[in-house]
Amino acid sequence: MRTDLRISWEIPATPSGLAGRLERFMGPGKSRSESAVETIGLLGCALLLAAGLWRSGAARDWSTGQLVVVALAGLDLIGGVLTNATNAAKRWYHRADPAARRARLLFVSAHLIHLAAMGLYVLSGDLAWTSANAALLLGGAVAVEFAPVHLKRPVAMAVLMAAVLVNLFWLPVPATLAWFAPLFFLKLLVCHLVPEAPLERGRDV
Image 1 (cartoon, rainbow, N blue to C red):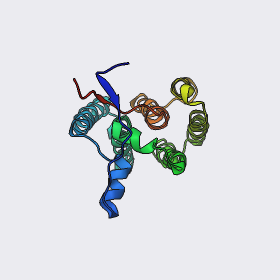
Image 2: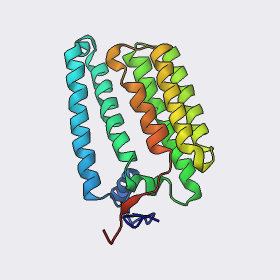
Image 3: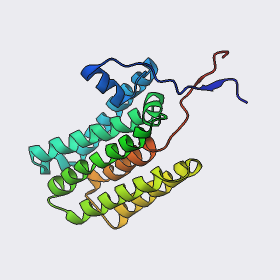
Image 4: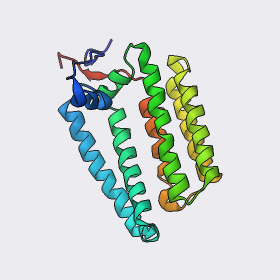
């Protein structure tokens, strides 16, 4: 038994109203260090994405609306990967509550809007890309969510790799958008749906 680590599923109380709903959405009880990593990671990766898009010249070919959609999608996916990987989010979205599974699946399903915005607007009506990725998302989410608990992580990794490979070889997009599918499926299938123990340092360390 490791004494330098401990697991804590205790969810702190949250305020009522909008502030409480926002805190629960992000994960109640987020530590300062988690918030710091999220902020630094978001800023750093967002700058890398913006610099890459600018260097490629792709932004010059998009309308203002398309550029806004790409920017918002990038920020949401980068921030979402980091947020859903925190102890606070794991405790909340995988709490012992019958409503938690429904909340997880609704969260994933809401991201069909992302696919519609990217496929039908940024990619100028690419229905095949949109439909195929929607099927991969929903099918993958069901596979992960209903897999036995000890298989959820490897199932999620298998579906993530399958989705990335399908997007690389059968659903190609411009190179400047090749980041979308990996981050999209990483956020939802691995970071959000896989339950992981909220680890903290042991008190005697």
